[in-house]
Image (cartoon, rainbow, N blue to C red):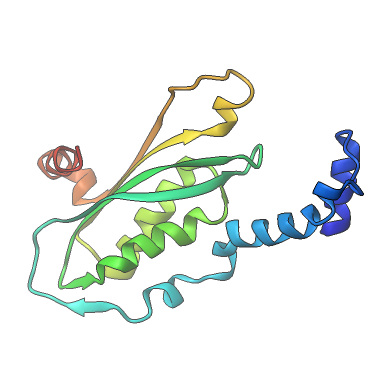
Length: 179
């Protein structure tokens, strides 16, 4: 990978042998490994058995989970906040595991629409939840730095499963509580 990064530096008009760029290929390789580490993680490893029996059937919400991802179209970052809600069906998950699930799927080349669905389906499936709602709000550097250059744009996506999709009252409660 480092040789390819040197070629890219030369192709854009830089001198890869310049002092400030000598270690750039190594740094970029390490950076990309970190930013895409979600490919080397599984849901089972992330959850690590932190699913517990519970009598609760009330909505559980974790708001404002920060995330960073890389747009698969331009390899530029997009970042923002993720809000996750679920209604347990006899099982709950350790709260930090929700943030770790968001992180795992975020650390892959992504589009926001797919990322939102992957998170909701993972939580829905692993818990057998009555319903799951995920809302993501993000700023995309591919829109800010290039192309249309719109600095204040925010993209919002949602995925609603189970009771969050079927029952308007449940969906409304969730969207009200995350605001």
